[in-house]
Every structure is written in structure tokens, then in C-alpha cells.
Amino acid sequence: MKSLFLLFFFALSAQAQPLKPWSGAATPELELNALDGKPQRLADYRGRVVLVNFWATWCAPCLEEMPSIEKLRRSLDERTFAVLAVNVGEGPRVAGDFAGKMGLGFNFLLDRDMKTSKAWGARVLPATFIVDPQGKVRYSYYGAIDWSRADVRDAISRLIAK
Image 1 (cartoon, rainbow, N blue to C red):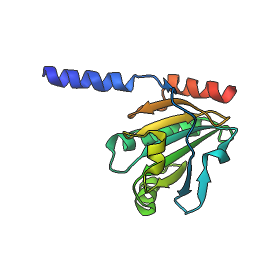
Image 2: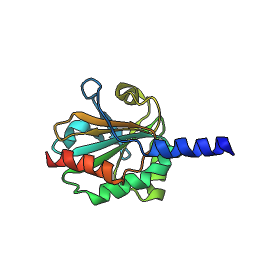
Image 3: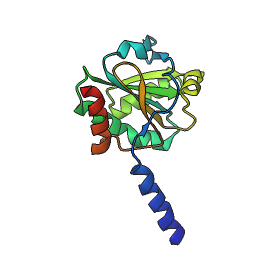
């Protein structure tokens, strides 16, 4: 019973962690194909705050947080906020089937060779980075989080307002 309580406590405390201010180097390049095969670059989103989420269909925490990412996306203006969901190591059919079933309205990119994930330091999944309108990473988060939390939305809204 005690170990179950500790596991529950650690799960709750992990969910309550704030976004971590980015202390890494310059923002890595991001140029990957979307599900339709068309290339997309992070630079194409300049002027918007971008949530870059590295995920895979076999990652249960990744799948659990996707609805909250969609909720956040819908609550913000698409002219000032975008989501790039980078699927790690899987193909367009697997990632596309998942996106279709979940009814997610953001852009899905494919990192089949995992070079982009490595460049971004996405050592665990999910790994998420918040990029400001000038193209600089400002926050990171490793693990699942409720992206519709007020503190998370406020941090992103502050970046949009700058």
C-alpha cells in the first residue's frame, strides 16, 4: 500500500512540474516532411509561438497528452500559435492513422531516421519545446503534461504577447 501511495505521489508531482526555461544552445534546425510528404520547416512559422512535440504511437504518455495539446491549440489564435507534432521513427500510415482517430488538428511531421529528435535532445518521449516568435526555444518539458493547465497557457500567452 505504501509503495502504491508513493507511486501515486510521484505521478502527481510530475504532472505539477512547471515548464522548464530553456538553457540549451541555439535552436536546432527542424525540416521534416509532413504526413502528405511536403517538407515543413520551423522557420516557416516565424512570428508564431510553436509547440514542438516529439512523440510516438507506442509511447502511452505521448498519447495521453495529445488531447490537452489539441485543447491548448484550439484555445489560442492560429495566427499566433502552432503545434508541430514530430513522430519519432514511424511511418506516415501509422502516424496518420493515429492522428485521424484522435481528431487532432495540428501538423504532424515525420522523423523516421530520428536525426532531428537527437539534434533537439529528445532523449525521452514525449519531449516538448516551446519556440518563441523569433524562432528561439524558450521552454522545454520532458514527459507528459496537461497542456491545458492555466500556468502552461499563461507562459505561452506571455510569449505570444511579446
